View 1 (cartoon, rainbow, N blue to C red):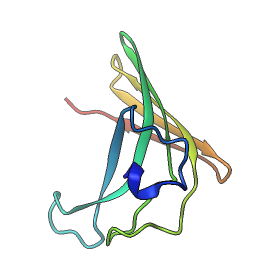
View 2 (tube, rainbow, N blue to C red; view 1 turned 120 degrees about the horizontal axis):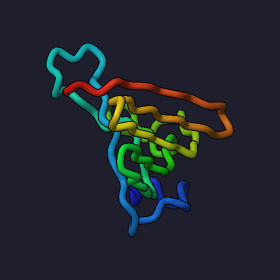
View 3 (cartoon, rainbow, N blue to C red; view 1 turned 180 degrees about the vertical axis):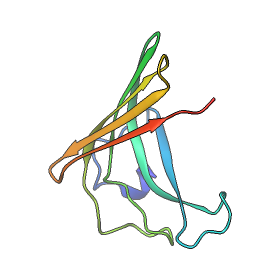
View 4 (cartoon, rainbow, N blue to C red; view 1 turned 45 degrees about the horizontal axis):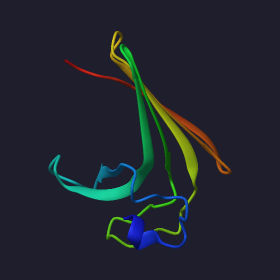
Length: 108
């Protein structure tokens, strides 16, 4: 992904971890009918026991359902926090477009 988006995402580093964000295709009939939506990159993880925090960037390597580069690109500094004691995870994304917050409760 990083190579696909060069040079438009100059801060993305190939020597740091990255993760694909997979989403269900529109009209999917199976849970494995996925496409690559975006990428989390330049990942740094801090594990403090019950709290794990991941700092990264996202939003500027978005693809369409058919795998083409999306016109909707919006770089955002991202912090994902997992509280192991409560099973809650939150993702905070901020950038020039505004901000987003996602919260999830993890199952057993």
